[in-house]
Length: 211
Ligand code: FE
Ligand code: ZN
Ligand code: FE
Image (cartoon, rainbow, N blue to C red; front, side):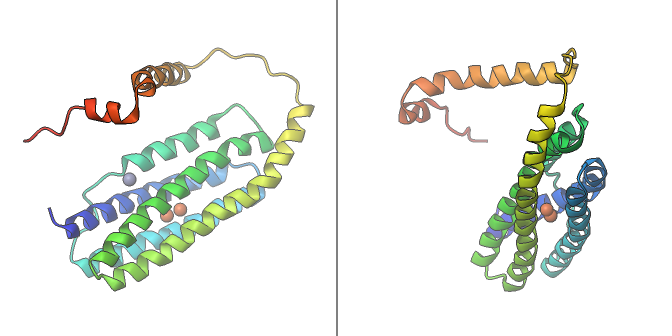
C-alpha cells in the first residue's frame, strides 16, 4: 500500500460521506423547526452538492474512480441526526436536540478533509490540496453557523420548557432499549481499562496478528 492509496481511500470515504449527506440534508432541513436552521441546512445542501462535484474533479485529476468505500462514520453520525429528528418534541426543544448531532456531522467532515489535506500536501498534490481546502472552509463555516444559531435556539428551548406541562412518560422503544443496553456494555468493557495504569493496559493488549 502506498501513501497515494491512503489518500485515495480517504477521498473515497469523503465522497461516500458527502453523497450520504446529499440524501440526508433535505430531511434535516425539513425536520428542523426554526427558519434559521432550515436555511442553514438548505444552504449547506447546495454547498454539499458542489463538494461532491469537487471530489469528482479531484478523482479525475488523480485518474481514479470515486466509489469504492462506504463511510461508516458518516452513516452513524447521520443516524444520530435522525434520532434527534424523531424525538417527540416540538419547536426549539426539538431543534436543541439537532444542534449536537449536526455539529458532529460537520466536525467529522472537518477531520476527514484535514487529514486528506495533510496527506495530499505530503504527496505534493497542490491542485488537490487547493480544492480540498475550499471544501474544508465551507465545512468550518457550516459548523460555526450551526453553533451561532444554536445560542438563540437554546435560550428559546429553555423558555419553552418552563411553559410545557411535564410530559407523560412513554414506554421505551426497542431501539432506545438497545441503546441503553449498549451504553451499559460500553461502560462494562471500559471498566478494566479504567483501573490499571494506561501503560499497563496498552502492554496487555494482544498485538496485530500477521496474516
Ligand atoms: Fe460536506
Ligand atoms: Zn468516514
Ligand atoms: Fe458539511
